[in-house]
Image 1 (cartoon, rainbow, N blue to C red):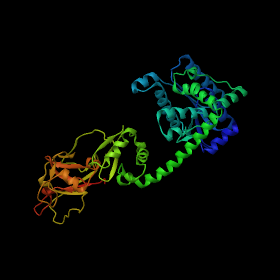
Image 2: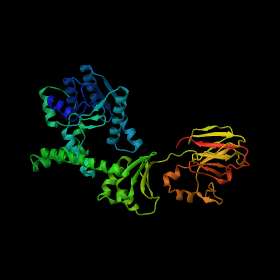
Image 3: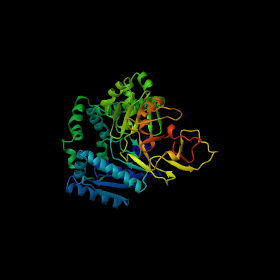
Image 4: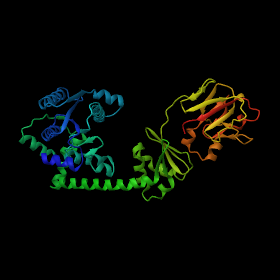
Amino acid sequence: MITSFINFIADNDLFCKEDKILITVSGGMDSRLMVELFYKTGFHFGIAHCNFQLRGKEANRDEQFVKELASRLNVPFNSIRFDTHEYAEKNKISIQMAARELRYQWFEKIREQKHYDYIALAHNKDDLEETFFINLTRGTGIRGLSGIKAKNNKLVRPLLFASRATIQIYLEEHRLNYVEDSSNAEIIYVRNRIRHKIIPEFEKLQPNFRKNLDKTIYHLRETYDLLQDVIQKKKQELVKEKDDKVYIDKTKLQELKYNKAYLFEFLKPFGFPSPILQDILTSLNSTSGKQFFSDNYRLVTDRDYLIITKKRKTGPFHYIIDNQETHLEHPVQISIKKFGNNPDYKPPATNYTASIDADKIKFPLILRKWQKGDRFIPFGMNHSKKLSDFFIDLKLSLPEKEDVWLLTSENKILWIIGYRTDDRYKITKLTKNISQFELLTR
């Protein structure tokens, strides 16, 4: 067992001898074995235990057992009690999901506070097999069927090589006591029903079922890893990031044979639900501007790209700039300078600077977003133009339009910041005072 443990850690590059590991210990036989193996192999570790207060005296018994185990081995002990029912009700989630969220959040907090390198979870080979069936019922695809990862960022699972049966035999042979969670026998839980009812039926049909299932999961994991390599190469071709926006090339996406599968993978980090994938693909040939939403992101179809941005936070509709200000930090950085009558002054030839006849404007100035119906006279022209048409000429996407700020005086546009000034406020030979506004963030 010890040799297999060490080999599994090395083969999967879980951690090294110098790393400090936070072991999550319930007190059950899996985590009890994990503690024993870490202790006997000399790894640096501490113990973390969660009491979800769901099983009354039994939960308190488990907490005390783990505390005494840590004391006996002279290793750091961390514990916490959660009001799991309250958290589940508050967040409108199941008790199982509440317990999962609570424990992982706390484990990571302890890891950071006490400078552990990794968090070790006591999942075994049987857990991997049971998870296969759970994900099969959920329709999660090849990713879910490829099993639990031995290493996922800071989470490691060094017992995935061992079956529950071999764990129990080892504990009995070495007379290592542990606590039993009575809820493990209750088949009201999906995992327990799979463990006690479904898998035994498959074993009746095929005595080598578990061995064959492990092979299947291994092959699926290899296939998934291979698929990820292919997807990464396509992602480099089609997906670009710029200015907090993600751009997916529409033309290249449409040319892909399995574009729905690729789109699913491209959008996975942003949480867009699978049912809308076909709607997004259908929108590729429709008018620009259609929007799709996940919890935290928005996808907009533009002329050439699907553009993904974070959902915008609500904030002030406008910002006031008084006559005394020389610098603006928010929402954009702008420096403000004033010049008197100077025949040698030359306006900078850039859209990032606006040189305005100061005597034609009235303070306070207002910095605001554009609105439907806004018009201005573009510098160098003698007739007004709708701002919406100006944006069309520039071929700005919807997110780019929403990023635009306007500098206004008495609700008249002085400067479309970063793009164009209004001809009515330009400097002439008659100008006596100049206000210069320069955009510092580009």
